[in-house]
Length: 134
Image (cartoon, rainbow, N blue to C red; front, side):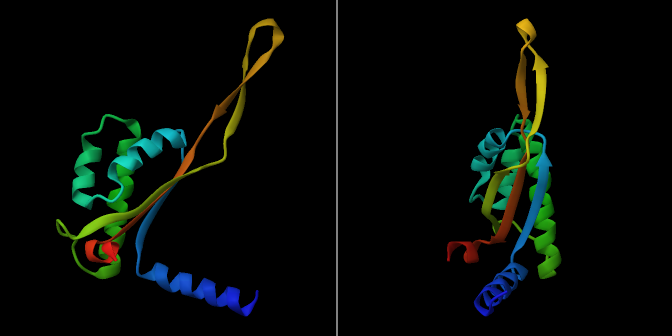
């Protein structure tokens, strides 16, 4: 590995030490459905986002709520203090595609239709409100 590449990697590691995040991988729902829920809470204060997710009737909202609680707990563990209302916000949330399961369904006249069972990965980053504004 080159010197510049190693320095960049070390800088990224140092920045990550200050940020609390949580990842959820291989969720068996399509990324499109998860992005709809992620867009509802992007940039929101965390306790307001928890309320939005709790009363949303989408299945993806329950999984995202659990992920957000995990990210809050990670922030509390890193900073040795309790998260209070108006203190934290969701600075970054993104949904990526996971590997697809490809299946065949029998179709008329001896054909087979392909079924793609999609999955996704979600990454959620929590930060203090004053740092997120910068």
